[in-house]
Length: 115
Image 1 (cartoon, one colour):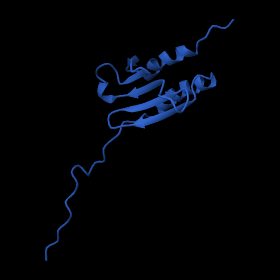
Image 2: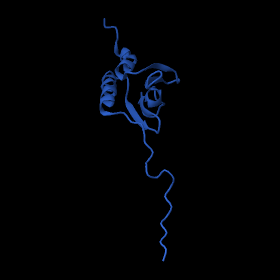
Image 3: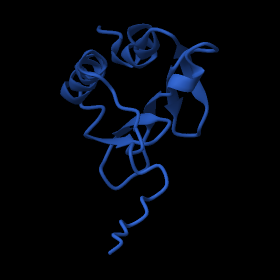
Image 4: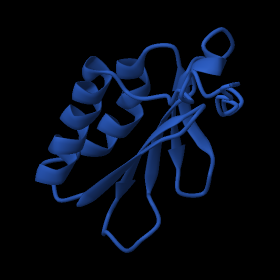
């Protein structure tokens, strides 16, 4: 009697890994997001965790396209930096190695002249 086992799927031993924000990164993002919600600038967010990128999308209203995307691309760690803030038109507003430094481009929107 011969026993035949089913052939394994290719690369089935390892599930495809996805890039995600860790707790420290998410707290920094949500800190800026919370201040902008209180200021009435932003209303909703969405997160996407892909195989090579983690994206935090910021919306003015839920049905719109995101006004900003905060992206984490670990493959760019050694080059320009793995964090970037991308505007609605697709232009990179700020890119760098330190998330808090990159997020400063969004915090500038909070500064207003008070008379």
